[in-house]
Amino acid sequence: MAARTINITEQQLQKLQSLAQKLGMSTEELLSASVEDLLNYPKSEFNQAASYVLRKNAELYQRLA
Image (cartoon, rainbow, N blue to C red):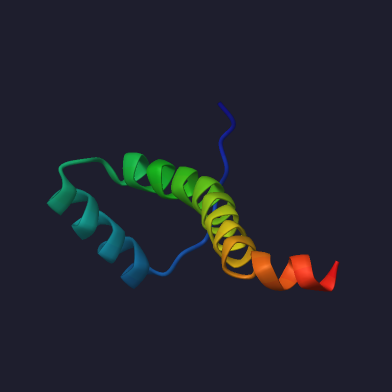
């Protein structure tokens, strides 16, 4: 596993620590889970949106073809 260092404000750190504590996890676990969600969520969100648009406009696309 690769390690990275980022700079955040003291206020951001306190918010992260507070949220992690409320969720019953370490700050590192919270950040790791957040990065994983960020990397996976937009892809599935885009796929869902694209599928919706294609289904919604299928008849129009057929007429234009």
